[in-house]
Every structure is written in C-alpha cells, then in structure tokens.
Image 1 (cartoon, one colour):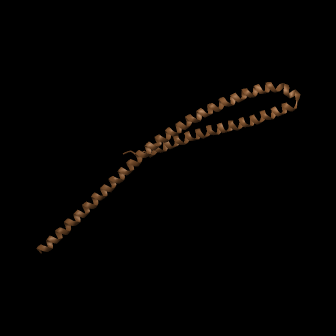
Image 2: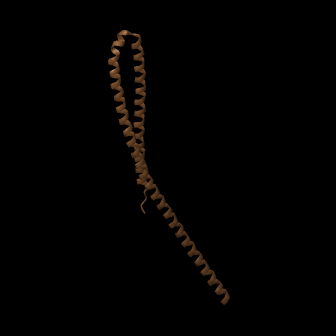
Image 3: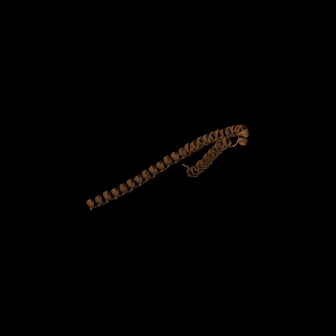
Length: 146
C-alpha cells in the first residue's frame, strides 16, 4: 500500500492556495463597498452644498448623472467580485472534498496496516506460546519416563 501523505500535502497546499484567493476576493469586495460608502457620503455632501449655493445648484444635475453612472460601475464591479468569490468558494469546497478523500483513504490504510501488524504480533505470540508449551510437555514427559 502506497503512502498518500505526499498527495495529502499537495492537496492541502491546493486548499490553502484557493483559500488565499477567496480571501483576496472577499477583501477586494469589502474595499469596494467601503469605496462605495465613501462615494455616497461625498454625493450627499455635494447635494447639501448645491442646496446652499446657486452656482453649484446649476451644475448639480450633471454631477448627479455622473454619480449615477459611477453607482452603476460600483454595482457592476461588486457583482463581478461576488461571482468570482462564489466560484472561489466552490473551488475551495471542491479542493477540500478532494483532500478529505485522500485523508480518509490514508486513514483506512493506516488502520489496515495497524490491524495487520497486530495480527502478525498475535501470530508470533501464539507461536512462541505453542513452542513453550511443546517444550514444557516434552520436559514433563522426559521427567515422567526418567
């Protein structure tokens, strides 16, 4: 039976790598959402400023159109990152399932090897006991004849 430990280590590295990718995507999404919140605060500040200044009020509709376009861009980027993160989660899960298969097979092999060792030890002890018994029987017969 071949040892699967190198294959298990390889799969563990794969799981770790996929987790790192997932974390990077989640961090990128969190950063994007923070950017979006900062942008929304800026939009509110600009709107309040436009209400106080007539010159700014005239240019606010153009700003509002640009703000809407930027919101759509944020949404598109967020949707893309969410999709990539979802795929990365699936990749992590798949790699983890694969790792668990190898670990279970290795555990079964280890248990089978342990059982085989125990069986061999038992056989050896039985043989030693049988030899000892035979010697004791032989010695008892010699004493009985003598």
